[in-house]
Length: 133
Image (cartoon, rainbow, N blue to C red; front, side):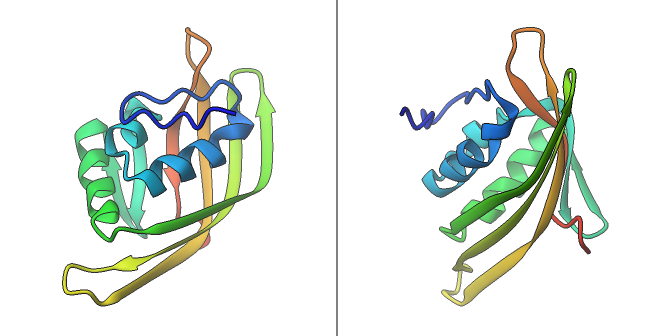
């Protein structure tokens, strides 16, 4: 099975595969691959009460997470699809180190909405990794 990690645009053909593709890209440090999984105007809840909107904002947020050289674990807990819209829920854990070498550990329950594009791939429209906060 191909890993889909190309340091460029990634493709989600089946929305229930997003967790593996996202986790692999995150662990590979593939910033552009992560950003490519979102619609151009998508929103990402970067912390409780903080919204990043659009590719440039997502790039900045993901660059901050990737700077920790993280180990990222993502486990889908539920998945629902109606036509061209899908809702996924997952548990996630990130472990790494801040710029001073101090340990960083984050985790939570994520919910995200994906939408099928005209070319058949699926992209995030809304991604909230702090859905339980």
